Image (cartoon, rainbow, N blue to C red; front, side, top):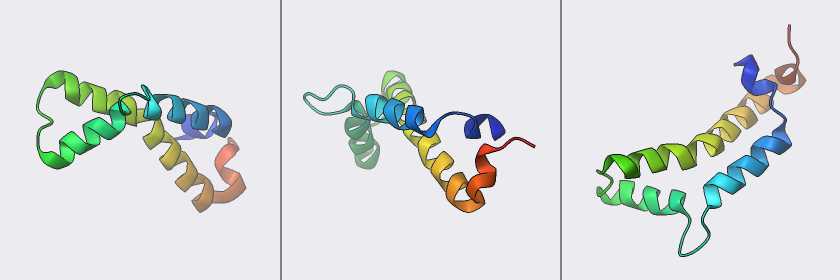
Length: 79
């Protein structure tokens, strides 16, 4: 996962906000798809793809933050 550690944290935060909140109206796709998943109505392939697309970068951000907190400064350095 060294490739993830090489991505600047600022870039991940901006990308996560952009994809996680797009489009803002009437509600973000990520929120809409998570509600569909919780309600059991997420069944169309396009909706599943949309969920994966909008959740991928926020998920990478979470993984990156966990790695940073777990491994500290070593996380961003290559061996």
